[in-house]
Image: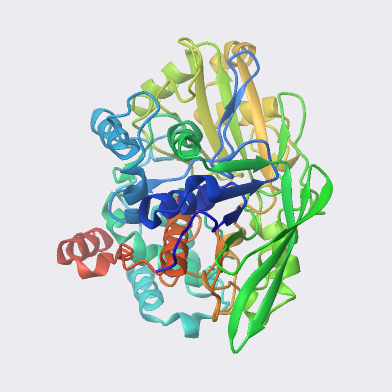
Amino acid sequence: MIDCGRETQAYLVGGGIATLAAAAFLIRDGDFPGENIHVLEQLPLAGGSLDGRGSPEQAYVTRGGRMLEDEAYTCLWDLLGTIPTLDDESVSVRQEVIDFNRDWPTHARARLIDREHRVLDASRLGLDTRDRLELARLLVVPESVIGARRIDEFFSEHFFATNFWAMWRTTFAFQNWHSAIELKRYFLRFLQEFPRIHTLSGVRRTRLNQYDSIVRPLTEWLLERGVRFEHGVTVTDVDFTEQDGIRRAKRLHLLRDGSPETVELAELDLAFLTLGSMTADAAYGGDDTVPELIRDKRDGSWTLWETLSRKAPDFGRPAVFNGNIAEASWESFTLTMRGPALLKRIEEFSGNAPGTGALMTFKDSPWLMSIVVPRPPHFADQPDGVFTLWGYGLFLDTPGEHTGTAMAESTGQQILTELLGQLGFEDIADEVRATTTVTTVMMPYITSQFARRSVHDRPLVIPHGARNFAFLGQYVEIPEDVVFTVEYSVRGAMHAVYRLLGLDLPVPPVHHALTDADTVLQVLKTAFA
């Protein structure tokens, strides 16, 4: 085990959940001095993609909302079980999640809606014998054989028209052209969700948005222990040394508020480097504006990985993930409603109180639009009488059914018009428009983790021979685990800290639903229903 003395420093590049988790594990499990931990972040706030901000006067916005789940999220729950909530130090964030979901359990009654505004019987998955055989084939084919093949290379047209695919793809944001390996991993990791995909009753929510419920308590816990959050800092390069197969990070090159600096790393100092960003170059729009689809990497979130990848062949290939915006982008929107009209109608239509209904997907929508209504308040300062709704569309370039405009070219109010049309609520359109502000977010790389890839395109958390550095985030390789989850970032952080510090502590194993006989039986019953 490394002696984490008073002089040993740890530099964590990026302020996302992977970095915050690594800092917490350093302190909690490695007895690392908090004041020796430096979080280097270019943005003014920590949290990375787990965001949530705004005001009732202007508008609220979250770029996304990630599904949490009991069985598969073992590392996240391990972390949050030791982080107290901001409201009550005797209650952990994990316990708050348990209590909230006990009081407001998810059980969607309107998971799929057709073009005639009818709630479909989503329990009828629509799989035929060929679909089942194709599913089974994907599950048994090794990843080495699948390689960089697409999802639609493994399934027939009938599969993609089923209720099952409409629900699975919108729950996890898959496109037909995404990596078949990633879909296979999702099937194996979330097989327990198969029998309940039509209700999403396995979903676990935080009480507030994930920034307020996870990032803020975790950040406060770290600050109380002396962790140094250094904002306005962009790490641009890292120098490495190699001798006898042992590699070390030796020097960090950074810009602090635009001024160049270097940080020399002593032999026992540690560097944790976040690679890439799925929310890089996110652009915002409003009621009367359209968010830009940025294609020229303006915010620099990919620069460090692109620079490092040229130093060693096993540091990954970022171009695989940031080189095809057309296949990685989609747009989300947040409604801030200063009146209950729309929420009341949705509750009557769906049979779900806010916070209990999970995703509602308009299966025939040209944008493949989905929405979710959270339990208010969803933001820490959200007052009574103000409500929010979040949604997204997977298809950006198809003209809307009720607007004739592609989602990528639509203002916030046009997206609201399309939503009201999909719901069949045109009779309350004037009232809703007058009391609703729409904030849109275009994200060029949001599903880039699902890009078709080979085995060497993502670097290991701890590259071979690395002694004092690790890679973090959604673009590292963790065998069998699934990207686009908070769990993936936290698991990578746990691996990085335990291995670099030489801690003899177990990392919770990746959940394998196929090892549970009851789960397998339920899946088979569902698939053949």
